[in-house]
Length: 159
Ligand code: CA2
Image (tube, rainbow, N blue to C red; front, side, top):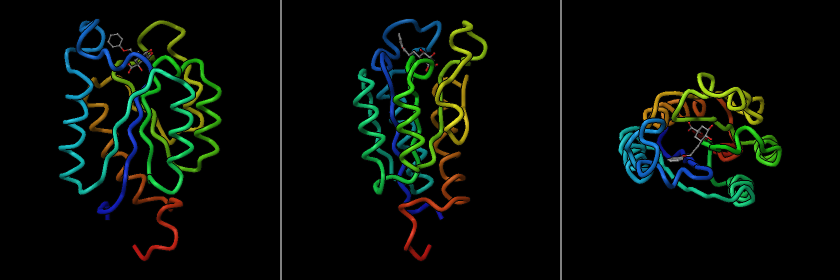
């Protein structure tokens, strides 16, 4: 049952500009509007959500570390750090919380340097190319992952 589970949404550099620049690539929906859509779906599914954005790699690493014991699933749009960050990859692999990689655009249909994700091998899966709907799909995937895996937060609970 999804009730009681908590998802941490993390957004990387420049995603605070969503809806304000380059609408041809990333659409016209702002990040607060994406958050509102996520919250609406999460409410329907009775799951808790925390939604954050940072332009700083180290802050994202710290948030991933601090998620231990507090969240059941992490949903991560690491933005450009997807393609560069060994630090984020190490944080994900060490925290022991299932993590879902998401992107607004289809990174495989763009420049070659976006095709490689350093975090994909340590993530549960990747959702890419559905615009803001990638975030909604991630809520649903999180519920499914939580129902099919034992997470550290669930250990010791009866359901
Ligand atoms: O498609 C995605 O969600 C990306 O993670 C977005 C990143 C990009 O580096 C990844 O390859 C794919 C870029 C986020 C920057 O967002 C902006 C939004 C509006 C205007 C400018 C940048």
